[in-house]
Image (tube, rainbow, N blue to C red; front, side, top):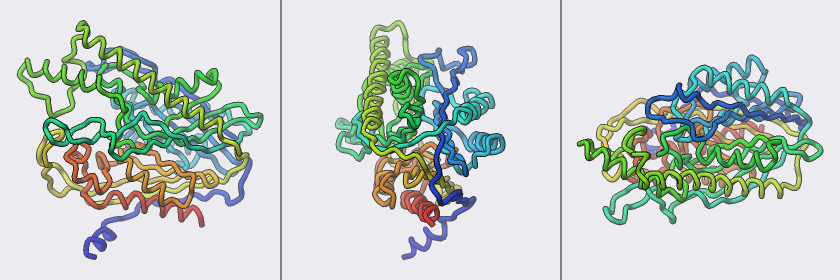
Length: 449
């Protein structure tokens, strides 16, 4: 009982807004656009050696005559709170789309430098929304789900050391759902697709080159399949504990880096190897592994893209009208600071830290619910939220609308793991899972009124 009272005392709600703009379903318009955000090679930091593939910001604008909404997907690792605030404020002021009605998601590719582009990146994101709004046309939308098996739980017991480590845990929890929100003209021609999947974009991380990784490969494949008459937006599912299922080349390349560093007297075996050094590009083994990484990235993009197309083909009752409603709130839970180091395999030690603030969001089109969290969240939290949602058509997006001061957010049961996600989390055990689930459920109740 005491812990429940403490939880209720610490779970605060701030900056609560709920925009139930219209109770009547109104005919919708939709428009989409994409804008390149590929940096110049000369602007890259020293540990980036070039451009593997182009990266983009993509946007869909939906309007029902009463209000509008924007879905945005940006091929970067993370967008900070200041980016979210600046971008949504500008969109609201210049385009009249309320900030609460905007889902601004990073694809979380690990192959793009943080803060790449700066203010110029923010302007390109806004420009993609402007172009999408200028392309508005009468539309209809549909929702469907499929499955893809290209992800896997990445928290496992190492068979040799018997300690926790990162690797493919085929028996671990994993959300295989591919959720798809599709927009087309009244004549049935494609406009855009917003698809959701839980997997880290880490396949190309050892190339030391800019890449949209698997999310970018999937979007490009879908767009090419429709003769580039569609804009395909990846939305990041709750992938905090989800890796691509085939990831061995990355482990092998990490090991080569670790050995090279060890020869120079530096032990990086229990940390993430830095990029730019430690891999000889003239080494035939390195070349083979890197080429395999590129092939697997494309292959996973094709496989996921094909499932998205499969779902689109089976959407049979598109809707021409919609209500649009949105809400946001901030959950505040107890925080902690780690006092020791080590990536995985040993217990962490902690002291009390500042409270963790988690921004939660909800955007609804009729009874299609998109729940949002501004952090990297374990898949079990999304699975449970979808089970408890009063709306059967619910997807959950993470790394959306800024960046919480939480680090990873494990589900309660995972706090027993000695993995890098759990060890580095700033969340105290026992609070975040229900704060997120109950918080978004509360938003759903408010929107239903």
